[in-house]
Amino acid sequence: MLRSESLEFLRRLCDAFGPSGFEREPGLILKDYVTPFCDRVTTDKLGSVLFSKRGSSDGPVVLLPGHIDEVGFVVAGISKEGFLSFATVGGWFDQVLLAQRVTVRTAKGMLPGVVSSKPPHILTPEERDKVVKHDKMFIDIGASSKDEAVEMGARVGDPVVPDSKFTTIEKPLMENGTVKGTTTLAMGKAFDDRIGAFVAAEVIRRLTTERLDHPNTVVGAGTVQEEVGLRGARTAAWMANPDVCLTLEVDISQDIPGVDPDRALVIMGKGPSVLTYDSSMVPNQALKDLVIQTAAERSIPYQLSLMARGGTDAGMIHVTRVGCPSVVLGVPTRHIHSHVGILSLEDVTHLVDLVVAVVQKLDHATVTGLTAL
Ligand SMILES: [Zn+2]
Image 1 (cartoon, rainbow, N blue to C red):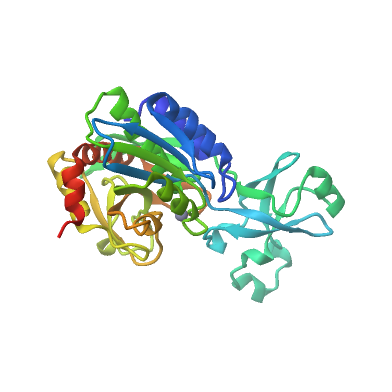
Image 2: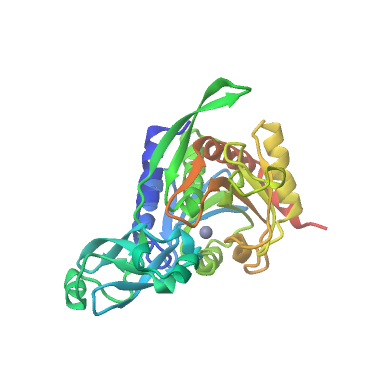
């Protein structure tokens, strides 16, 4: 179970306002949290936060990135009636947008709004059967004219995020009809990928406060602009110059209606995932095996995952400079890229345990061995 201070940090990090390109708020929260137990906290010139802790040796450099941007929107126009059109930031499925609350950040402060389109009463039967595209939707901030919207602070280019608060859910764990215990889930926005940055911070906090030996320098990174093309990963990786990288991410929990249970690779509550392949990277096989072996030794549950489409920061980092042996470890999360995701805090704790254990093994010889012929 997470410490109450850690849970509070996770809550603040996820509730923070930070679509791609506007990550200052989650960046500051991350910086404040990690400063007491890191040797050095710095930023690159794109906004990624790098926080490092030296162990018993300077090298190898172990990078633990998690991106701190979230999917969101930017205001694209203001109609004469006072409604805001918007462009998407990151990948959205248009059907999850309608009737959702959003927050628009303006120079005059935050504005609550709701994503809307024509109500069903005035739709033609043909319109009713069609999927509404986001460019036909608008954000209603309550204004009745363009002048009112502008007076309220709205301006083209203003960032927008889902209005969705972090909460926890206690639930029973059942086995054959009997209660075997309880577990805690988290529900909220931006788990993709504040949970990755959270895990990186917790790993370094534990290494420091529990005085755990590690034969390397660990660099956590809260990277920016992942959702718009892994941009922060490029500059953060150049700055950190890592020898090995464990990218920390969400994974797509497939225990949802519509997915054949026999084909579901990753399930919430069954342990962190080890991504074996995605469209941006094939992991270093020796590193992947080291992670799997470490999980088995420590009796940490894990799930092998595969993502035919989509990529992660590792897609950029593993080809930085001369290349960097990399693997992606994930927290199974339901409903990513929507207003509300759900994940298991037990999976999060297991991922922290696993990364700590792997980091402790990454000495110079082991890391050199990952790419030796
Ligand atoms: Zn994402």
